[in-house]
Image 1 (cartoon, one colour):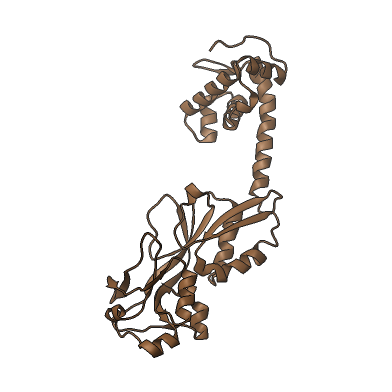
Image 2: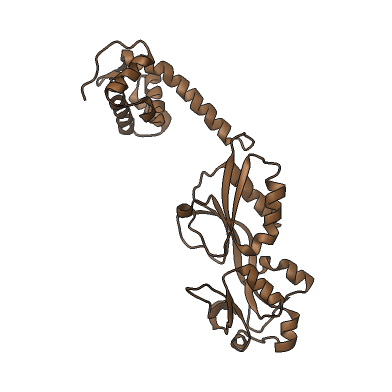
Length: 323
């Protein structure tokens, strides 16, 4: 590119140079400005690379890109020294202001009590709605008027990245390998439960093999439905065939069906704690059966998530009785 060789005494001159190259100041990369500031302040590409923690070749690429965007040379450089051009000196005065503005904005955004409206999109299993819906809407959100919660209750795993979720709560014995970040909030176990009404009428299964002779309520949807449960038998996970005349794609519907005598369900204990305590559902104890351990996880798409999301995760963990 042919650079403009003229004296620059204001940033307006830089803007005119940009317009002549059909480039606007808005097109400049903020990270390039930061790199320029470090090089200009130290008059050294090597020192700037050390301070920022990137390679010297990356520094050079960013400075070259910035010069191309502006259409002017910013440095005189040879193998022994680096110095600023007139345009570089003008840009340096303003680049320091840009650094201060960006630093202040970053500091403000990292404060959980700032005035910026934070929207957090959260996916939750329907079975945790009773435990979390009210405290999320009251104890968490009301003291934080700058936080807007978008709650999505669904028992199928959502694609956090494709669907734009900031956070998901998942109950699983083992999370699938993925690029997502996970944090175990608590542990629970998967248990078989049924109402006393059902057990008085149909009896209680004595072993997992007896389940094929009982009315089991399975989880499913229009594409697929459960026809077997993986039951922990003496420490081994064993597929066990079930008769499931009724299936539902919603864990809360499974719980209600079991409460009203519809049959046996296989569900994480944390989802039916109140029903078991109140006697509405009874835990089935069978020979050769050990309840399967599983966890409740917070899952999110990036390691450096916002303070608001981290605060929300802590709050949910506390509500689950494990904070």
